[in-house]
Amino acid sequence: MPHVLGVNDDGAGFGVKGENATPPSFLHLHEAGVVGTSQGGAGVFGTSGDIASLGVFGSAGIGVQGACPDGTGVSGHSSSGHGVTGVSQTGIGVHGLGGQFAGKFDGVVQVNGTGDTDALNASTPSPNHAALSGTNNGGGIGLWAVSDSKTGNVGGVGVYARGATYAAQFDGNIKVNG
Image (cartoon, rainbow, N blue to C red; front, side, top):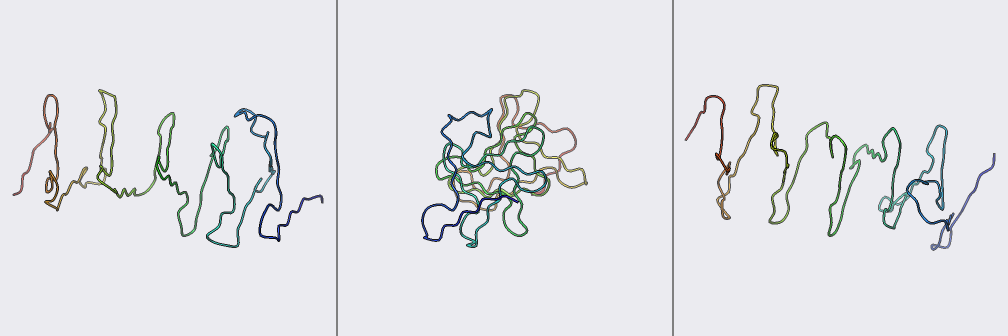
């Protein structure tokens, strides 16, 4: 069975290197320096004996890209760590763009804000839909807001609303405690 084996034992350089001089084209994804294909397993597989190192690394306009006409372009899985991590020093860590949804999560989503910005910011240009919608089909509260700290300009306010016509509109009874 033919194979290619590349070993780098001097601590620098490459074990196997492929180079492509053809100008890049999104429609010709196999014009690459290294191409891996498989009928049943992984086309390209990377691993590292050092947990702090990367199994597969890419650098350029797009470091690593996954493209698939009818399945998942990029997938991440981990038994105990992050399945997918996105980090940017000055830009957006993870950016999603989709025909139906930019992102979909099955399970609990946690947002931890850092710095002096809103932790979660939602906006829409639609006059028919809310920028943020909360629905609880199990009989619990649909939207929960708490502010336990009285620091800052508006600290201690659980809900703040402002609108061109009304600050708030309620369909149904209102209960106020306090």
